[in-house]
Structures are given as C-alpha cells and as structure tokens.
Image (tube, rainbow, N blue to C red; front, side, top):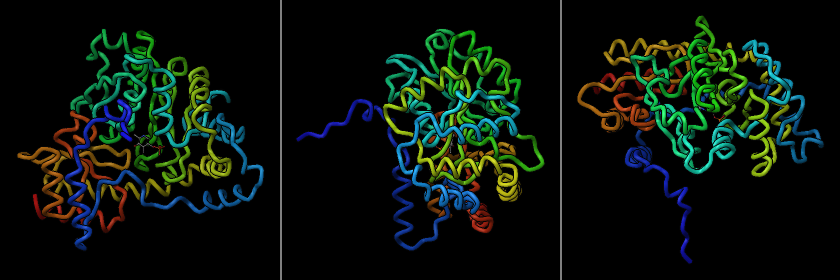
Amino acid sequence: MDIIESDRLKSLPPYLFAEIDKIISKKRQEGIDVISLGIGDPDIPTPDVIVKELYKGALVHENHRYPSSYGMPEFNAAVVDFYRSRFKVDLQSKGVIPLWGSKEGIANIAYTFINPGDYSLVPDPSYLVYKIGTMFAGGKAFEVPLKEDNDFMMDLDSIDKNISKKAKLLYLNYPHNPTSANASLDFFEQVVEFAQKYNIIVCHDNAYSDIYSGSGEKPVSFLNAEGAIEVGVEFNSLSKTFNMTGWRIAFAVGNTEIIKSLGKYKTNVDSGVFNAIQVAAIKALNNYEELVLDNNQIYDRRRNSVKQMLDKIGISYYDSDYTIYVWSKVPPGFTSQSFAKMLLDKADVVVTPGSAFGNSGEGYFRISLTISDDRLEEAIKRIKGVV
Ligand SMILES: *Cc1c(COP(=O)(O)O)cnc(C)c1O
C-alpha cells in the first residue's frame, strides 16, 4: 500500500535545522555537556498549590466524565475575575472558552474562519502556528516584517491594501516571541481601527502577558483597546505564566460571536479540557499576583545577568524586560544559522537561529532564560570564549 500524506502536510515548509539537531544528539551521545539556550519551555516547576488542587479535583468522580467544550462555569468565572483584576477588562461569561493550550486555539481559529484562498496576516518573525494553522485551513499567510527600528511593531500601513481587503484574520503577539517587544495601548487602538476598516478578525496571542520585570510596566490586554471586543479575541495561556506547559490549559476571550464559532468548531474535534485541570487552573488564576511575583523575580535575575554579560562581550540585543527571551544580534560575518552552528561546534551551546521564526529573523538569535542561573552564566561564558 502507498502511504501518501495530504497536500496539507506536504506543504509544510522545509525544516532548516535538522543538521543542528543531528549535531546536538551526536554530541550528547558522546557525553559532551551541551547547554541549550534554545528551549521555550520554563524549567521552573508548577507551584505546589496548583498541583495539589489537581489531585483534589482528580478525586471527584463527576470530573471523570466528558467535560463541556465551552468550559466549567467555575473556570470561566475565574477567567472573568482574572481579566477584571489583572487588566480591568469586563468580559461576558459567554466570551470565554478554555483551550487545550493556546496552540490548539490558534490553529483551530483558522479552521473556524478561513476559506481556501483567504489570507491571514501574520508577523515575521513569529511563533510558527499562525502561519501553519492558516495553511492547514487552506488559506494563505501574508507575512508582515517586524523591524527593530519600529520596535518590532507591525507596520499596518505598509501592508498592500489589496491583501488587507482579502484578509480574514490578523494574528498578533505582544509581548512578542521571539523579539520580546511589548506593545502599547496606542498601538492596539490603531489595530482596532485597521481591523474595522478591512473587516478583519484580530487574534491576539498574549501568552507572555505576565512575564515582565517586577519594577516595569505590566503588558496590557488587546481588549483594553477601545472597540477591541467588536473585532477580536485574545488567547491567553497558563503555560508560561504558571509554568504549566505540560498541562495543556489556556483560553480565548473576547467577542462572544467569535468565541461561539470557535466553540462550534471545537465541539467537533475535541471534547473539552479535563475538569480536574480546569479546577487546578482556577486555583492558579485566583492566586496569580503572588505566583507571578515569584516567577518574575527569577526571570528578572536571569535576564539582567544575561544582558550584563552580553554587554561585556559586545553582543547587542533588543533591550526589553518582557518574555523569557533575549533577542540578540548575530556578530558580523555570520548568518543566524552559521552563528548557531559555530556556537554549537566550538562552545557546545545551543541558541535558536532567528531565521527559524521567519525570514525577518535573519541576523538575530534567541536566548531563552529557561535554565538555572549558573548554567545560563556558564553558557554565556562559553559564548564569550568563542566570539
Ligand atoms: C509558548 C507560547 C504559547 C503557549 O502555547 P500553549 O499551547 O498555551 O502552551 C503561545 N504563543 C506563543 C507565542 C508562545 O511562545
């Protein structure tokens, strides 16, 4: 029998970093101590109070049955409270839906709204799911370059009007992976105006809403912008905020019609998030202030230490106090990929080449702050030794 993949899978962009991956596993097999700064996954464990709540929730028999795709009322209420307390945003109870991680929602919203041939506008560089979700749904992703001299904000005026007219979705993500740039309310208000003008649904990914420097300004929600609720939704996730990447719990909030349509799609491909996980997530959301504080102290310390060390080496970076990444410039004479390969060859350190996130990531590399302070310092010292 011939096993033939769908055109959808065949259309995936080629994976450029197979060679780097091969070298990593070969080195590790040889017993070489490779330090990875490439991991976008917190090393800090989920707080015990949340884990204990999962255990309690798992013992409740009613929680063993199919959950509702639209969420437990108690979970949705906790999200409403969280948005009111954290962002001063008043959500309607029907404007909330839990997700199996925001990755799922980001991909499924494309299936919910994209017809073959429709465009979505996606940032370049970015998390790849915006583009691939669109392609899987039969649409075309139009990549809009984010430039450092514009603080990596999407320049909406630069987009060809004929493309904007054909666009159905606009994906945004601030604070931004990989650049760590944060957006102002003012920017989001321009986004609302643009979306209204071209009738585009805005999908804002706020996965890093609560990773910020303790002393700095907190990121806003897209829904803080006037009129945002009429044009879009925001994805938010417990993954980074509470170190829960493995739990698969996130949510979408905002426009009730958009949420309802996403739910309609989801009821046909999944059956909701395990109720005991929703119960644990309620505990996290109800105690966010305290839990986020602990986390941000750790990232602050690591971020500051990496910045100081990069300053000493003479590697420049985008100066920001957000996300778990430091977006750094590749030294002259290298591409993103050749620099990453050189670091691996000579220093046994893994970084993510900027070009992994799109063409406009060329010339940069991404350092993740997701390893212990001493390993992080050791890695930067090794980099210093070879540049
Ligand atoms: C980590 C991350 C997410 C979170 O994904 P989950 O599926 O909720 O774990 C979403 N968007 C971006 C840009 C991320 O980096």
